[in-house]
Amino acid sequence: MAKFIWKHAGLCLALCLSHTPVRAQDSQGAFVSIELNALEQVEDACRISFLVQNGHSSGIDQAVYETVLFDTDGRVDRLTLFDFGALPSARPRVRQFVVPGLACASLGRLLVNGAATCAGTDLPEDACSKDLELGSRTDVEVLG
Image 1 (cartoon, rainbow, N blue to C red):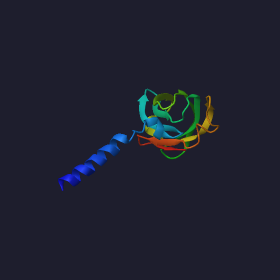
Image 2 (image 1 turned 60 degrees about the horizontal axis):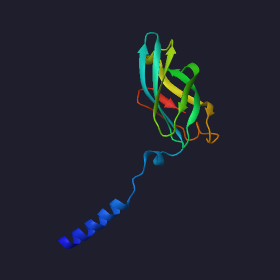
Image 3 (image 1 turned 135 degrees about the horizontal axis):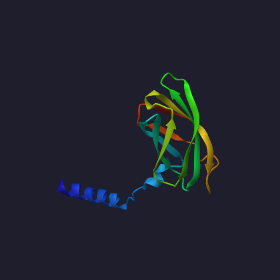
Image 4 (image 1 turned 60 degrees about the vertical axis):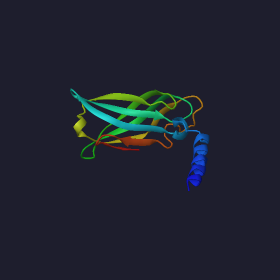
C-alpha cells in the first residue's frame, strides 16, 4: 500500500511542478471593469470613488463614461460625464469624482450609459464598452 501511495504521490508532484501558474493579466480577458467602491459626503457634495481596471493588453489613454445618477425614488437626478483618464493595462486605478449638490444618501442607482470617449493605441473600437463589467461595494446599484 505504501509503495502505491508513493508512486502516485510522485506522479502528482511531477504534474504540479510542470504546471505553470496563470498570471493575473492572462486570465483577465479583454474588458474594462468599473466598481463603485465608496461614497463619502463632503459638505454639500458626494465624493464617489471607483476602482477601475483595464483588462486589455494595451493601455487606454482616455476613458470617459456617460453616467446617469438616479435618486432613491428612481428619478433621474442628473446626467454627467466621468473622465477616468488614462487606464494602464492590467493595473487597478482608483478614480474619485466630487458631485456638487448631491447628498450621497439620496443616490439610489447609477447607470453607465456608455463610453463617450475611448482613446488608445491598438485598442478595438469598442474597447471601453464591450464586455464592460460593473459592480458595487455600496448599497447603490450600478447598471450598464
